[in-house]
Amino acid sequence: MIQIFTAENAFEAHLVRGRLEADGLRAEVRGEWLTGALGELPVTGLVGVWVKNEDVERARALLQQMEEFAETDDEAAEDLSGADGMTVLFA
Image (cartoon, rainbow, N blue to C red):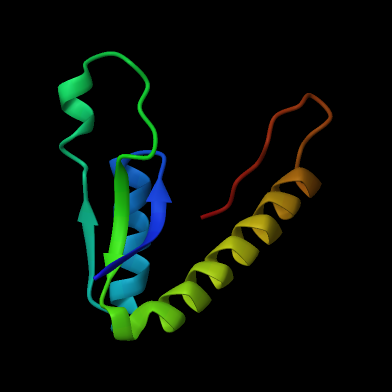
């Protein structure tokens, strides 16, 4: 297996894993328990998402789609910002 994504935290890693698995790829989150050993210090780079070697290209393509969607979503949120600086989100 190969690590294809380094997450800021376990929550982000599980979101990515869930998206990959929704598309039929087997993915694992590794390192999420390492962050607890470090106490209150901010930790990055310990939590990652791993996929099988043969799924790397497909997984990277899905990650690219997720990134593009996030950028589009950020732009839409900016367009919906009110004059008072409050952002309106629709689910």
